[in-house]
Each structure stands twice: as C-alpha cells, then as structure tokens.
Amino acid sequence: MYINFTYNASVRYWLYSAFKIIFYLIFFKPHAIKQTVFTILNRQEVRTIRESTKATREAILTSAREIFLEYGYQDASMRKIAARAGITPGAIYRHFSGKEDMFEEIFAESGNKLMQLTESMLNIDFSAMSDDQLIQILYSRISVRTFELLEGDMQLFHMLLKNDSGTYLNRFRKIYIDRCVPFSLQYYSELYRRGLASNMLSEKTIYMLSSSEFSMVCDLIADDDCKNGITSESKQAFLEAMNILLHGLEAELGIRKQEDPEHGKN
Figure (cartoon, one colour):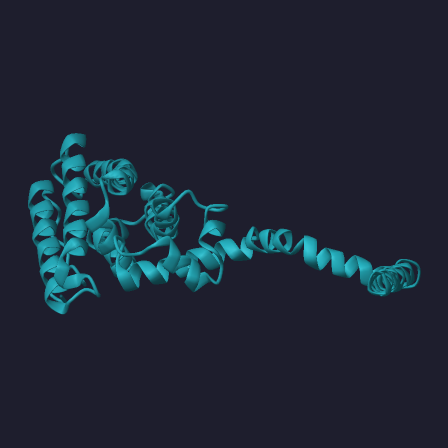
C-alpha cells in the first residue's frame, strides 16, 4: 500500500510539473510553442514547398543534363538525377512526368539556337539588297551555320539522335525545312528576276535540297566518332560535301560567276 501511494504521488508530481511548464509556455512563451509545433508537424510541408520552387526545377534540369552526359540516356536514372540535385526522387515528379520529359526540355533549350537561326530567315528583304549582297547569300550556307551552332551541344544532340524514336528529330526537321523552303524559294526567285541566275528551281527541288542538307548535319552529329565533339576529319568532310552541293547549285541555276571569299578556305 505504501509503495502504491509513493507511485501515485510521483505520478501526480510529474503531471503537476508538466502542467506548470505547459501553462508557462502558453501564456509567457507562445512563440516557443508555435516554433516547436511548426518544426515538428510541418517539417515535411516545408520540405515540399522548398522542393516545388522554380529554383528546384532549374536544379533538376541542370543535374539531369550532367547525368545524361556522364552516363548516357539509358543509364541515367531518376535516383541519380535526384541525388545530384539534392532532393528526393519523388520530388522530381512534381515537375516532370519522367526522364523523357526532362530530356525533351533540355533539348528544347539547345534547339532554340536552331530556331533562332531559321527564324532570322523569315525577316530578310532580298529586294533591298545589292546584287553583290544577294549573291553572297548563296555562299553563307545556312546549313554550315546551323552545324556551327549545334557544335557546342554536340554530345547532347548525339545522344538525342541515338535514343530518339523519331519524335524530336522529325519535329525539328519539319521546322527547319518549313522555314528553309520559303526562304530559298524567295531567294532564288529574286536571283532569277534580276538576271543573276538563268534558271529557276522548283519548290519540290528546293524541298529536297533542304532535306538533304538537314540530313547531312544529322548524319554528322550521329557519327560515333563525333559523340564527344566534331573531329577535324569529319568537319572537313562535311564542308567539302557542302562545297560540292554549292557548285552544283551554281551550275544548275546558271549563276553569274562570282568570286566566293569562302571558297577554298576549308
């Protein structure tokens, strides 16, 4: 009986002490209660908010790009990307549906360079150019400029062409050709109108030429020898092929003979 009394008294003492502490905190230190409860109960919510920010999305894309280039598309896992970004794998799915979704957005950033180049074609006024300026357009070789723009992201584009099911490539091929054909048709028409060319190319012929140039760039990017960057041998072969195409155009159009400042440099 004595033991039970001692135990009960002890329990009552600690309950009374706990009550006094809680009473003190509620009335004299409410901020302490609030901070403690917030920390304990909302820790997961705070983490969720942090992982949903724009900065986190950018960190995911940066990490994904690094992982794709280090391990390749097939071996790049969501777990590796999450670890590099410093978040949980589940947090990635708040921003992206999966690996393919991330890769598409990364590729879109690089593809914007190509879009900016082809978009610049749409605003050129050939009628305002002198004859010499107009002729030099032929030697500017849009496909070579396209190749040079993509060269900086060669690893990424190489990976794309090796893993693409056709979705991305067909999309950019369509955009490239849809812009190149009207540009070229307008250009060749102006040459013919001024008498700088004795022949005119049909729209179908221009379409096939644009498609061939785009395929040449893609074949070079997809070459395994160039997956870590364009080799000098491959670049030389590409430029030689473009020169052959250029001379064929000169002959077919009957271009008035001009000195090509770029001819023979490559």
